Length: 333
Ligand code: SD4
Image 1 (cartoon, helix red, strand yellow):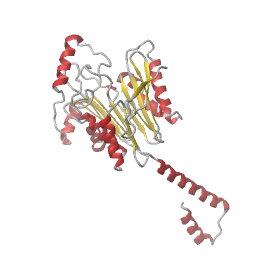
Image 2 (tube, rainbow, N blue to C red):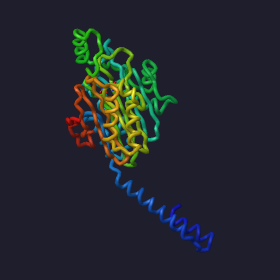
Image 3 (cartoon, rainbow, N blue to C red):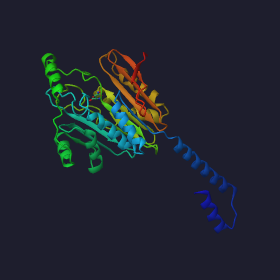
Image 4 (cartoon, rainbow, N blue to C red):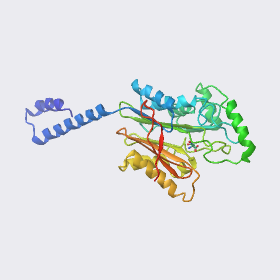
């Protein structure tokens, strides 16, 4: 109860007799309100993403700087890269599967734990926007393949050939020597996972990818799986993953990172623990890359990844606002 209302109410009903305990509870309320106000004043909107997606961070930051919300920021940030023809791991221009088909995975999650995802989506430049439509326009969370594509057309998305000439040529080259075998990490790890906090302190996340390069037809990775490639709990923070999706799915990676933060770990500590747990289950393997990125309610970020050959790196960039810093620096552990 607000102090002013309380006093007004009390003076009406009890003719000015206010007990000490009630007064102190009023003061506590006041303190809480002040603490909340202070918290609000210290909220600094932030957008972060995996790797060096300068366009994505700039776009997301533009949304936040114009008082936009975290959900719009992550969606528009991810879309900036999906439309980037030079980016070979998301949207148009992405690396196809081993049969030459570009199939895309994406998911999005908001402050209220609403979420939407598309898996194995073809011919649509912006899977993240379709994922948002799934979240907002259907009673479902995941749409797959032809159904997802059909839904996208119904929502007004255009059919586009995603296999660019350059990507087609690279695929034809790959076919010459690959023996039709999928090799993990050939895509050079560039899934885009985005997390943002807006001026209200609300967090949202998005993740979009073409997945593993020259994957087996039909394969779906972690990126569109809520809890694996992305997870947001607005009370705690958010996390997103990049790297070999199979390993992230097995460990429900992003959910794990958020839960570790709930238990008191900083985003950095949580990401390090997540990567180390995966590596502990893969003793002896030195051929894959895994990375996590996390953001908590204080606006603190963390990132950590392991690369083939077991080089661990701490992520510093996490593209803080629009000061894009180079992402990962080497750190042996
Ligand atoms: C996947 N996690 O499909 C994605 C690939 C990735 O950077 O992150 N590449 O497994």
